[in-house]
Length: 195
Image 1 (spheres, one colour):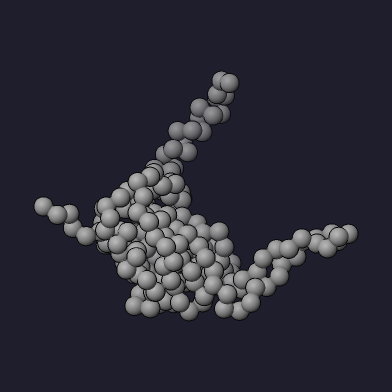
Image 2 (cartoon, rainbow, N blue to C red):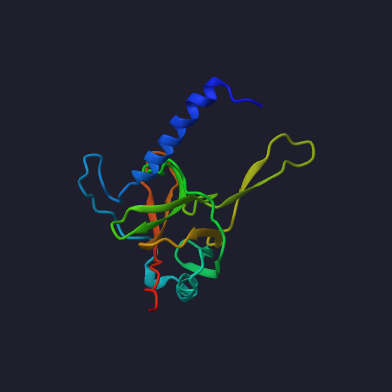
């Protein structure tokens, strides 16, 4: 299949836009005029993260990426498993997710709080938990059934080890127009290399 003229014209523009979006990663708390805005602290304090030592060990393992399984019950974040892996991770989200967008995502941030890597999570951690069930025989529509309050939600993050990475931030904005909420800020600084 030969590319059309439209493809030949659009591809360079799309690549340039992706490159610019990657170079212009947002800095947390910056307003459109560049002035810093303070952000409330995370919902889950770093000291309250259960089994954080598992994540610390994975980051120190020196592999290309880290895969972490978390459980969150609305109050406590727990590292249920973690593994250091030698693999290429999926690309980052381009263009960057803005803090005023609806959704749930995680991001690896550097020393200047700049975003180094960012990916979406499949469902909100702050919205009421529910799952879809099929209709009864002869019924027409699927419907949502709320899960019991306090049921832990499991989710997995996979991120590359990046030079200069300081934290893994988990953010959620369950409502349109509401600012995102920092659910957790987890240290992921790699230890210095041994001589």
